[in-house]
Amino acid sequence: MRLDADDVARSLRGSWRLMTKGAEALPELDLSRDGFWRSFLAFALMLPATIAILAALRLAAGLSNAGGLFGAPSLALSVAAALSLAILVVPAFLILIRPELVQSPRFTSFVIAWNWGGIVSASLMAVPATVYALGWSPATLALVQSAFFAAIVLRLRYCVARATFGAGKGIAMPLVIASVVLDYGVIRGFGLL
Image 1 (cartoon, rainbow, N blue to C red):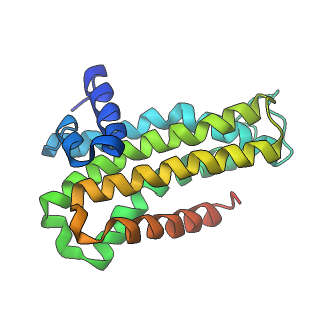
Image 2 (image 1 turned 90 degrees about the vertical axis):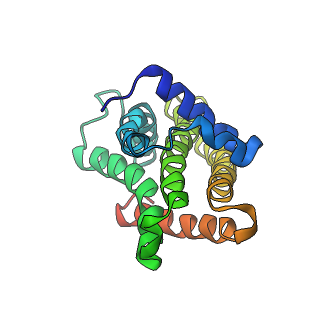
């Protein structure tokens, strides 16, 4: 099982288009069993976002990036683990509260769309981190920019939940709220706040 460039491009485009097309964009994602497992392999695509966010967090912690990003290995591991866990924690939470969801094709579609959307989300959050790490914006402006991009991420999460579970189920908004709480717990747990 491997990822090729066409799969990656189609899946990233499909997850982004969930915000404008809703459930109509789901067929752009590979919703098969192999597509499910490939959506986890795609976490490797978060490496550029991880590096950008790590550089920004190092600056915020008063560490210089001039000597290299991996001078504080525990911080680097914390950032990588937190980004991955922030994506995985919501499906795990759903399984915890409703174990029968595992058998549902909607849940499988949700996990696939959520994983690809998570990669898009990490990339979005890397934009203000990069601008800050390069010294192109002060910390306060970077914080405002991060809030703007976080709003887009929340919109994407809402659209993923709505497209996969259905508009009439009333699941999308509670899921977004749960994702914010769970993200906060993950970030706090790794000491990144």
